[in-house]
Image (cartoon, rainbow, N blue to C red; front, side):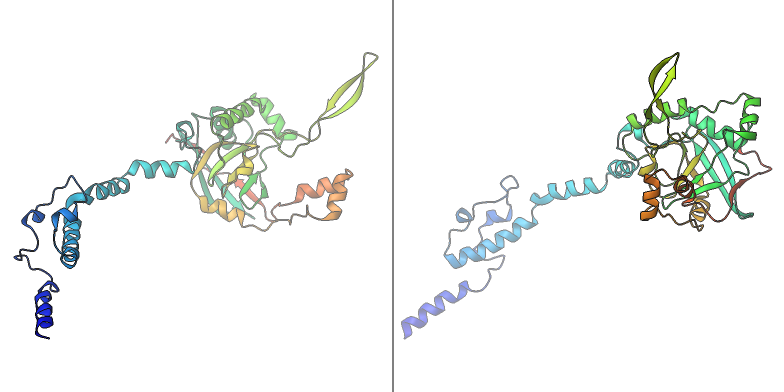
Length: 336
């Protein structure tokens, strides 16, 4: 009994954690080298298993206090303090990320004074991209200011869609055509289509983003031409008959939301700088309900019934008259 009690008393001091002055921890553990991140504990603490466990815990605490983990902290701070990365991420949403598709800088401004049912709704100030789309920007500015002999004034918005609102432009016949001929204005859309093709080749991503202003240059729903037999000089020849009419390059749209469906038909010529709330107010006007899903409409459209064509033209048209009104202030002012 006495011998067993001696054994217990001799092993009890090892249960308590060693103090800094205790000879259990060798002095060289106080200055651990930083080059080997994980020192060999068996060489440092040549003690019993219990003492080795206590010494290992102390060594682990000393390892955590050494500057071995500093490189990880430096790399994290460098990633968080990288303004160039954050800027590039923001531009990536505007285009495909290439330098040519970076956010455009307007060099000219125009404005539209809008009325709904004769009541002033506000002014939309538009910045035009005269550098990237010179023909489109010149066409839009001349129609806003009236220098083309014809203008958007007193003309109506004809379509309101969930993602954009569309202005009807000017007519290619009647009084508008006569005024355009007097001033020698050319309303051909060939140059606009060429700019639209260059824009698609340079920037394959979505271009009609929320707030952009675009000119309608082609009709994506237009069917292909139909072949027909034509008698010329006593001979029968196969000719192609155009179905439907292409836009005259004066209709424009204002995207209230991102509208990738417009990229196939509209050329971006600028963006809204002020008055986006006016464009959204136009988008909230009640319209004629679209009925293209009706089986009666589908059958009528399939057999070529003209009543279906007339009805389709009325879909999404606003019940209210939304027009661009005249203003005493010049419609084109300065360059930004």
